[in-house]
Amino acid sequence: MAALFVETNGIYFGLPDVDPWDEKRDATKYAGPWSVVAHPPCTRWCRLAGLVEARWGYKRGDDGGLFASALASVRRWGGVLEHPAYTDAFMAYGLPAPAWIGWQRTLCGGWVAHVEQGRYGHLAKKATWLYAYGIDAEHLPPLDWGRTADNGSGALMSWCGNHTKREYLPLKHGETRPGRKHIRQRVGKKAASATPIQFRDLLLSIARSTTAKEDQR
Image (tube, rainbow, N blue to C red; front, side, top):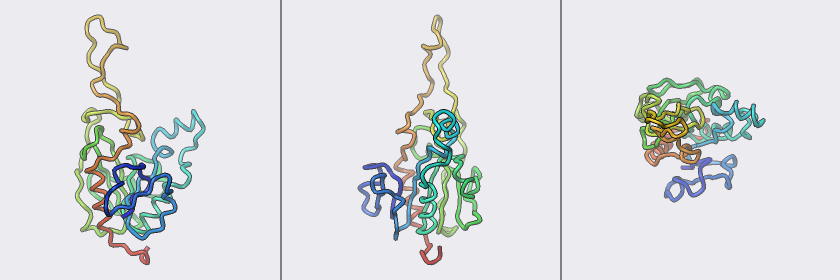
């Protein structure tokens, strides 16, 4: 299998049956033949993209064709793509927003699903949308379905549409607002974007289940 748009020396490196494509290798050049797990960057597609465009001029959706390349690879070679829940990329490329529970069939013959990486070891809830292609219905795995309340995870994140309101412990006598302690810490960008090992293995198992052939795509 191939892992596309992954972190250099990250969790997909060193696996015997996985060919990792980081930024240096340029995953847009992947030409098969194995099924893929794709993690295209989300910065230009997430809920913060509009704010970034307004403040710094980086146009929403202008990711240099990375999402389009990842989607094309999944459709050509089979596999699965993951992106933050509520990503604008799904609508831009004609993919439906998934329901909270279950895999839903798409008009293009693929499948979409909503899942939380917090149920697979992430510190935060990290709601995620999946798009799988080239996999028969009976081979789609059941996921740890469900919707965690915003205050139900162990940490907060403000990355790609998973923002939740920061909470504070009650003020003590004589304590001012700047001295208030957070109930839950907000994780940084690197920790927020990390993929838990358990979730990685789930994605790899989906990619291994592909039955699509190149001449069928």
